[in-house]
Length: 63
Image (cartoon, rainbow, N blue to C red; front, side, top):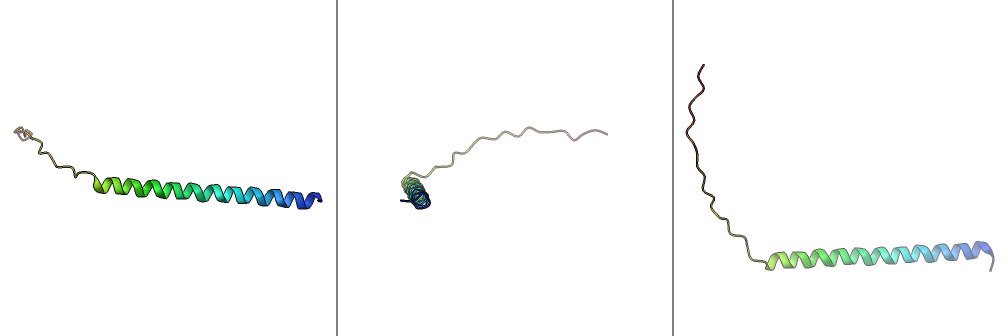
């Protein structure tokens, strides 16, 4: 096998392995996002809790 053919085959193998890894990574990200969305949908809704507020009376500024 001549060097040019060997370099071409090695390059093709590297490109194929990078593409396969990228595809697997993207699928894993989508699977995680979908799982998180399913978990968020099934989680109980947060109930708003009233917070007591005290307003102090202020005197208008004097000139």
